[in-house]
Amino acid sequence: MSIKSFNEAARALVLWTALRGDLAQRADDAKARQAADDHMGLLTPVIKGVLTDTGFANTVAAQQCSAGTAISASTVWSSSCAMRASP
Image (tube, rainbow, N blue to C red; front, side, top):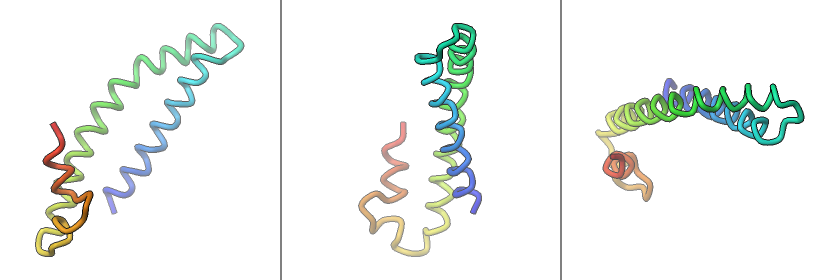
């Protein structure tokens, strides 16, 4: 349940930041464009780092939950494939 709730919150944060990116390009007010650009500049590396690290930890946790069954190795996009593909 913690993996699912993290994923939902992460999607919301990414979409909110993407909205700010749209505002940075299309806002009518120069002050609003600058504020949105500052938001993007601050949160983009933070979001990238946190979501990458936590996503890897969640992949490991999901793989450990299903280690007793063949589920983790039998699917095309399995958690073990995701773990091997990560840098």
